[in-house]
Image (cartoon, rainbow, N blue to C red):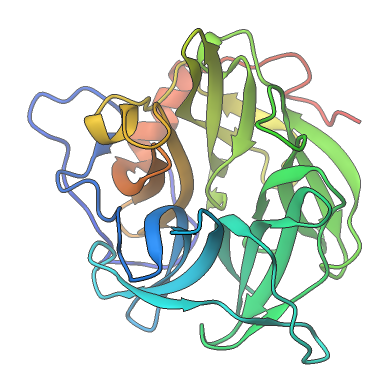
Length: 336
């Protein structure tokens, strides 16, 4: 039996698999849980991150405004499904208290670390790269130093130090829609200076992830390794298709992949995933999980338009991964 290392979360969203379902991951029956015009300023809400907070849930939400620019908003929920999104954009101050707001901000990840809540997002810095900030109350936000120079996306902090160092996954990219990309890991003693970079996983010769890959949700610590949900992208004659896969990384050296799904876990299929604003996108950004039951809820952006939830459990998923693993060259080594 695989154990999730972490808190019990009995009030997290959950639905059992539908009768006759043989999939490892299944969609919430009420999807999408949010989408168009959630507030006066916001046109679309998607690719967002959530976390347990004081008996309920808080989230950092990507909201594309009606001027087309993506910005970050705070949201609150009692059940993880019905959300109240604040119309006010997050206002950032630097460590000296000076205003330090990004020109745009999108695809946030959110993690509790050292009794604080850290947000990583794609920010403008002469091109897209990773911004980093912290809050203790979801009311006051301190922006820290940018993690990397351009171009970089899909930054994901691990929820604890490993061998005394902070660890972050990322995906070096370009200034556009990036027709390439592998997942890398970097470490830091202080969340300011990052180095000792290693390549973790490559995009592969399985077509669903053949164009590029990127880290999704914050890795979940389990007795078998770090469970990472990630997106894989296929280039078709009709554009990119974003699907969801998973990998298990070594607990002590997450630069090494132990298992990796040969086939996708979920691919665009429902109308809200295959059409609307940017067709054919399922983009994982966050999870909620219950250590007592092994239940996992995956939050994903759909078609750059709305937010969906899908479910799995850790025993079913890890067994599937072990039975259907496919590692690419250098995945299982510390590649440098």
